[in-house]
Amino acid sequence: MSASVESPQASPGSSAARRWLSVAGAAALWWVLYSLNRPFWDWLLFEVLGLDPASRLGESVHFFFYDVTKITLLLTGIIFVVTVLRSFMSVERTRALLGGRREGVGNAAAAGLGVVTPFCSCSAVPAFIGFVAAGVPLGVTMSFLIASPMVNEVAIVMLYGLFGWQVTALYIATGLMIATVAGWTIGRMGLERWVEPFVFETKLRGKVVDPSVGLTWDDRLAMGREEVATILAKIWPYLLVGIGVGAVIHGWVPETWFAEHAVGPAGVPIAVGIGVPLYSNAAGVMPLVEALHDKGMPMGTVLAFMMSVVALSLPETILLRRVLQPKLIATFVAVVATGIVATGYLFNAVL
Image 1 (tube, rainbow, N blue to C red):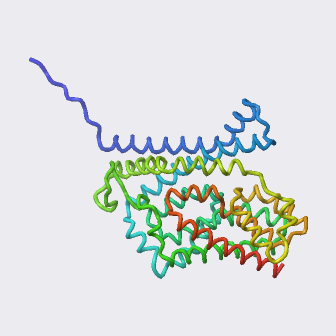
Image 2 (cartoon, rainbow, N blue to C red; image 1 turned 90 degrees about the vertical axis):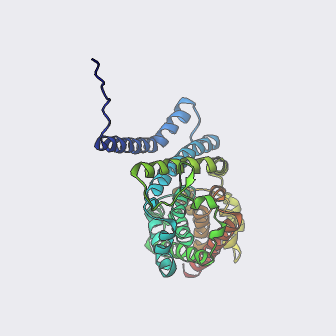
Image 3 (spheres, rainbow, N blue to C red; image 1 turned 180 degrees about the horizontal axis):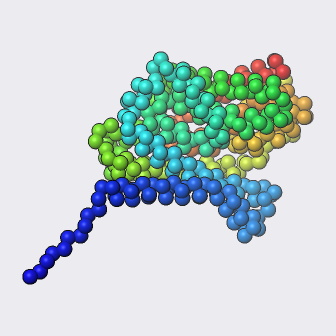
């Protein structure tokens, strides 16, 4: 007589435990990789390969590998989290909640969120993609994209140390105003049609689904993983090109040319026009801001240059191109640059 033995099936509780242990392990691994990003490239490039960190080549190579890794990790983490969260709410419901009459409030709130997220212009792009994909109104998301690199705690602390509280307070107020008004203006123009369609699609196992109907936690986590893979597959060439351009021009700023030409009534638009293609964060551009001011350049012109460098950059627009059509990118740059030029003239008038 033979007896058959059935293999025990995993209980729902043990299956859920394994799922959340896997999620916790992935989150811990993400944090370790993000924390070790800079030390690893410092060690590999400067100690192992012997590049000079003070040289233009060493600085550019380090910038490229560090920023590519950082932004890839940010894309992975933010897109995954936002996709899981948005699986509880449809795009249409999110737009209805944050759009309409509340949009102006949403712009101000998004600009305020940008202040406490110390991203450079390229690092803010992953969050921008996630917010737009979640159904947050385009203009509200633009307010975040502008404020995050322009007005953050690094810029605030360094400006205060260099120029005092009056300049710092005016910079914060005008930066938040630019982010809020520019985002609101873009939102009023109804330019969602110039966002690439795939951004608004919620897919599970290759099929577009309604995220508000009948999804399990395993479905939601699968959606997050698939969305990360989809976005990275679509954006990686733009990521490499954008950061590569930033690496080439990183640290290059024509200080002598500025001192000679960015003067008089045309000084502010000249400074903004040259600042837009460059790429740096607030900490990186601040020494130049101090040097230009010491050379006698008007405060408004100097700060308009700083705003254009940290809030708008060529690498940023290259990254955005994968999710936004050229008309929308051009509108974004034009609206923000106009606000920065006006702010520069305001600073020159009152300081």
